[in-house]
Amino acid sequence: MWTALLSKELRECGLFAGLALLAQMQLLGSGMDMSLIPFLSSGRGAEIPFLAARSFSLMSDREIMFITIAIISAIVIGLNQTLMESWRQTSLFLLHRPVPRSQIFLCKLAAGGLILLSTSALPLLIYCLWAATPGTHASPFFWSMTEPWWRSVVVAFACYLGAFLTGIRPANWLGSRTWPLLAVVAMGLGLTMVPFWIPVVYAASAVLVAGLVVSILNTARHREYP
Amino acid sequence: MSDETVPDAIVIEHLSKSYGPKWVVHDLNLKVPTGSVYGFLGRNGAGKSTTIKMLTGMTPPDAGQVRLLGDEIATMPPSTRSRIAYMAEGHPLYAWMTIGQIVQFTQAFYEHWDHKLVDQVLDHFELSKKQKCGRLSRGQQAQVSLALAMAPDPELLILDDPTLGLDTVVRREFLEALIQLIQSRGRTIFFSSHVLGDVERVATRIGVMVDGVLRVDCPTETFRESVRKIVVGFDGEPPDFPGCEGLVTWRKVGTELELVIVNWGPGQQAIVESLEPRWTDVVDMNLEDAFIEYTRGSKRSLPIFHRENNRVDRAAV
Image 1 (cartoon, rainbow over the protein chains, first blue to last red):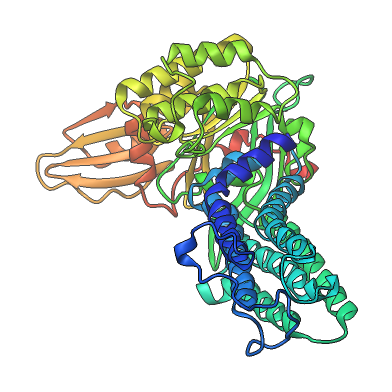
Image 2 (cartoon, rainbow over the protein chains, first blue to last red):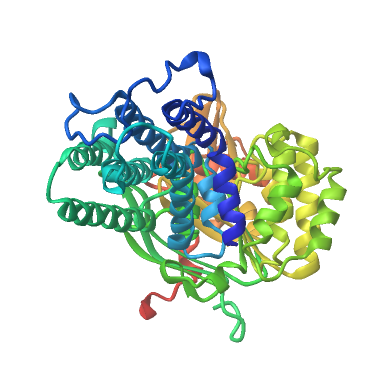
C-alpha cells in the first residue's frame, strides 16, 4: 500500500519536482562551472562558495536564488498534492480505501519530503562536496559555512507543510485559507535570517514542523470532503 | 432489525447536518436491511449527496450516528471499510493512470481482490487495461468504477448517482451488470438516483428526501401504489377542495380538479363526492409520476408515510 501511494504521489509531482531539480542543478552547477545550460550562466567568477552572510543585502545572488527556488518549489508541490486532489474529487476515491486517513496523509507528506530532499538537499550536498574538495576553488571551506543553506532547506520543508495545510484547510475566502502558508513563509524567512542562537533556531523550526504536521493530520481527519 | 439473526447493513439515527442556518439533513432515521437494494431519491438539494457523504465519512455530521455493517463510521476499522464499496458521484479516477494502473493501485489497499471478476467486468464492457482513465467517456469511467468497487467482494455498496450523465444505452448496460452482480452474491446496495426508471427496475425499497427530511421509507411498490392522482370533473368552474387526510396537492385544470392523495380510500372518496362532481377518475401512476407529484406538492404539508413502519427503534436511542 505504501509503495502504491508513494509512487502515485511521486508521479503526480514529477513535473514540478523535475523543474525544481533542473533549476537547482543549473544554479548550483554554474557555481561549480558545470552549468547545465552554459549560455544561461555567467559562471562562477570570483565567487567564494558559502561565504557566510545573514542579511539579504550581504547574501550572494546564488544563495538568494537557492532559497527562492527551494521555497517556491516546496509551496507548489504542497498545493499540487492537495488542491489537485480536491479539484478532481479524487480525494473521495482515495480516502474511502481501507486505510486510516492519517496514514494516507502521512504517506503524502513522506512523498513531499522525499521530493524536497531530492530537489534541494541533494543538489546542495553535491555543491558542498564539490566545495569541500581541495583544488576546486581558491578560497577556504569549512562545513560550518554551509549551515545557513541547510537551514533554508528546513525552512523550505516548513513552507511545504504550510502550503499543504492551506490546500486541505476549508475556509470561506482566499485570505483566511492562505494564512497558514503566509505565516509559515514569514516565520521561515525570519528563521533563515537569524545570525545567532542557531540551536534555538533549529528547535523553533522543529516545533513549527511538528505543529504543522499535527495540524495537517487533525484537519484531514475532521474536514469535509466536497 | 429486519431479521433477528441478520443485522441491518445501514443504521442511521438522528443524523443532522446544517450549513449556516439551513438544515441540509434533519433528524434522519433509517435502517437498510441486509441484502436489500435501497433507492435514495430526492430533488436537487434535497440532502441525498450530503447524507451519502456522511454515510461514507467524507462529511462529519453535526448530530446523530451512522453504523455500517455494525460499526460506527467515525471509528470504523479498515477491516470493515474493506467490506464497503463507495462510488462517488461523477466517478472520479486518476486521469493520468491507465485502467491497468488504477486496478493495480486500488488492489494494493485490499487483502482480498477478485482479479477474475475485474477482468470479467472490463471484458464485458470491452475496456482495455491500456486505456487512460482521462480519455474514457463518462460511461466508461462508471464501468471502471464498478469493476473497482466489486473486486474486493464488498458486502455493502454505496453509490452516489451512479448513472448520472450516462446515455440510455450505457445506463441500461450498467444497471444490468449491477443487477447481475447483486443477484449473484446477495449484497446490500444503497444508491441515489435521479432516474426513476432505474430505481423502479432495481430497488426493492425507496426513501424520498424532501428539504433534508426523509418523507418516505417503504417498499418501492408501496410508494407507487400509495400515491394516486384523482381527476374530478365538473360541469363548470370546479370548487376549491376543502382538504382531506393524505392530500399532497390539488389544482384546478379547466373544469377539472386534480388531486394527489396518499392512501386513497373511502374517507377521501366521501369528501370528493360531497362536492357533487359529474365524474371521478382514479389514475394509476408509475414511480416517476408518483415521485414528481409527491415531491412538487406543498413541502410543509406532505404526508409522511413511513412513520407507521419507521424502522428505527427510538426507545433504544
